Image 1 (cartoon, rainbow, N blue to C red):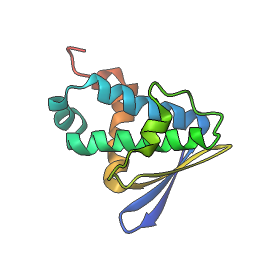
Image 2: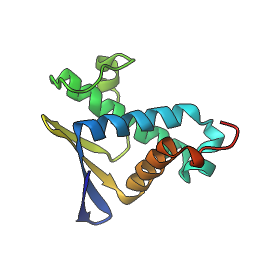
Image 3: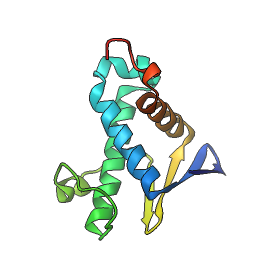
Image 4: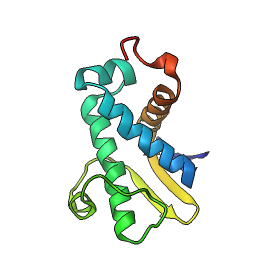
Length: 129
C-alpha cells in the first residue's frame, strides 16, 4: 500500500489486488456489523458519510466489473443496478491489472484506516462482539 499526498486535502491510495479486496471487504463487513448508532462512537465518523462512502466503493467496483475487470470478487447485488445509481461521495477508484488507485479526502482516508484497524485488530472491537 502506497500513499501519495495530492495536496488540497486529497490523497491517492495505491493498493495491490489483495490490498484492495481486503480493504473493500473490511469496509462492507464493519459497516454491516455495526448498528447505525455505533458508527459515530466506534468509527468516529458520521453514519451517513460512512454509508455513502461504502456505497461509492461498491459502485466503483460494479462499474469496473461491468467494464471487464476480472480480479474483483463477484458482487452480492446486481452490478447493473448499483452502477446506475448516483453517489455524492467524492471517491474515485481507478482499476488496472495490478490493483486500484483511490482518490480520497483526508476524512475518507481516516475512515478507511479506522475501519481496517477495527476489522483486523480484535482488541479494538467492542467487548460484546
